[in-house]
Amino acid sequence: MTDLLKKIIKTKVQEKSNFIHKIRFPRYKNLQNDTFLTFDSALTALVGPNGSGKSSVLTSLYGCPDGYSLGKYWFSTALDPIDESGGVNRIIYKFVPAGMDDSVEVIKKRVRSARTGARKNPDYWETARPSMTDNMAKMPDVIFPEHAPFRNQSRWKAIDKKVVYIDFRSELSSFDISFYFKDMSKHEYYSHVQDFLRNRSKVLESKLLQPKYLPVTWHSQVINKVEHLTKTQLFWANKILGKTYTSAKRIFHTLFDNKGSSIIFYDGTKSYSEAVAGSGEVAVVNCVCRVLSAPENALILLDEPEVSLHPGAQNELRNLLFTAIIDKNAQIVISTHSEHFLKGLPSNAIKLFQQNPANNRFDVINECTPEQAFCRLGGVVNNKRKIYVEDNLAKAVVEAALDDIDSTIRSQYIVAPYSGGAETIIKNLSVHFAINDGSEDIVFLDGDKRCSVEPKDREKYKIKIENKTLVLKKRRTSISVSDYPKVNNLLREQTNVKGNTFPLPLNGGTAGEERNKEDKIQFQLKILDAYHNKFFFMNVDTPEELLWKISTGPFVEIFKAQHTHIDEYKDLLENSAKSHHGEEETNASTILQFQKTFLKNRNKKHPLWEGFLDELRKGLGVEQIEN
Image (cartoon, rainbow, N blue to C red; front, side, top):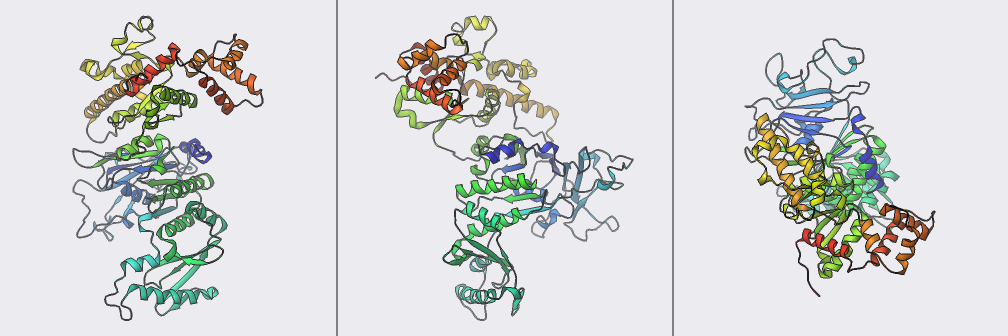
């Protein structure tokens, strides 16, 4: 995890004012009625299939602040009239005005003139009185002094926030717009667009020789201005593109018969325009300039920023966005199909759009791991199976076990430490497996996290079952309907995690309280089955215990003889590492390397090691192959 990402995760957005914390949609486009999104991270990623409403949510956010209208991007035409037969389209969002302690809700909707009942602009959106039918709070009768700047008699004022909206699919240079879309069939002077662009490029070059006279006209066309990239803008453009440009400038003009821009790059030896550089470079430069010139506390919206960018460029662009959050207190929301923008983000930063088969409308899962999101999109992060473990030592031990089970299968697996501890792993990955029941990945946790066992193993764990430190596994099919109300307690008993803390992918909506309650129970039962089917455990409490007990040889015995008075195996290995490296040289990295030395000295015939291999084989579904 990068330092930038760590800072973003630690950002406490709940304490931010003039930050949109929630938006809900009582009725809006193709979203399920009463769908809502929470913004619990400074960067939020919207993920879902094409046509699921991601861009619609971005444009709704664009229309939230004072002075911005959603009608700029969503408007009715004769071919595509806006349907309001089921009620007025409206959005409601929550924020804390700067200077207030409490949050307020603002509603914006398509409105008619109060005087004539007609719409002068049929797609005009403005704030309205709180809607009681949408469960908005009534305005306080008294206007307190601290509230006065943020309200009038009947409603709260819209949030005061500047918006930067970047749609990467429309980021074309002036040259590309003409080259791909200009109709030359009836042009008076040119038969081919190439001839047109050659001539106009000469004019552009000549006019740029005297930049102090800008803006300058040529016939009916104009060169408005030239912007030289600052050192910071150039740094980020080079970093994202993997280039070493020494300078660059953007020219805003209409010489190519469209209102657009051209970019001229210098690499120290020669210069060339976007016609050579390509559309991806134009999009990046424009994005960098707009993000870095955004004012403090801006709302920055990006639609599919991965377009035309390779994975490395996507990672660096994400770093630019992180920097804007840290340096400018920006709130950033992106829509994306790319795993590279999701990697490492906390679950509450990812919003997954999914279709309701009952009515083909879309709702939103407000917490979703990167793995869940990408799998739901049909992506394949890697065709290797994953074995999730708690830490790097567990990873090393499992990798060694794979070699001992069958070295030929090692290449089929990725052993992946999952940060956050066992409880986080159980909560997130149980839900992940419940959604993606075709996944072949597994989880292999320390043995001290085992709390339930298969009924067939009753005799093996008889004492622990009698002591009630273990229970017998219960699966969905063995649970009666009468026990459904106890499902939260059942999950805690079976997984050692509170049942009501699992991040359920349910959105409520208008299905009715009883239907939503039933859906929740059914999904919790799916979580229970996923946990029992996908989670496996070591035959010892910790990997440190395993190493200490199975390692042998002269090197190991020196430390075993020195440290006989310590009960905790983790402390035994840590103190042995200190004896070997010295106090000052001992850190997490040297301890891990020391533990790996013990691992190399394992007795492969030790019953504990053979039992460990058996547990791993069980999880992988592989048979023991005799040599």
